[in-house]
Length: 153
Ligand code: ADP
Image (cartoon, rainbow, N blue to C red):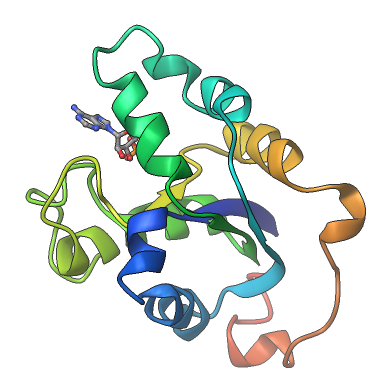
C-alpha cells in the first residue's frame, strides 16, 4: 500500500474545515497513520515549493502558508497518492471539479484547501520532510476486506 502527504493549509484551518477534509479521506477508506500540527518556516517552504521558486508569487504563497500552523497528515491505502491527489482537484479552485475538495470549498488558485503529493516519488520525499519515522504508525484499522477485494491487497 502507498503512503501520501496531505497538508491542511492555514486558510482551511481558519475557516473551520479541518474535520471536513479529514472526513472525506476517511469516508473514502483511506487510513490516517500520522498527523500533527506544525508551524511552517520559510526554509522548509523554500524546499517544499522549490519548483515555484522563480515565480513572482512565491513570497505570497509562503506568507499564506505561515499565517497559522498547518496540519500535516499521512494517509495510507492502495494507490493512495493518486486517490488523494484526485480528491484534492485542480490547483485552481475555480476550475476544480465539483466533488473534489477544491471544487467544493475553494474559489481561488492560492487558497485551495490542501496540498497533496503528486507522485509516489514526491510522496516519499515529502513525508520525510515533515515526519520522523516514529511519527508514522502501522496499525490495523478494520478488516481490510471491508474496503478491498482480497485480490487487491
Ligand atoms: P498543487 O498544489 O495543485 O500541486 P502547485 O505545486 O503548482 O499546485 O502549486 C503549489 C501551490 O502554490 C498551489 O497549491 C497554490 O496554493 C499556489 N499557487 C500555484 N500557482 C499559483 C498562482 N498562479 N498564483 C497564486 N498561487 C499559486
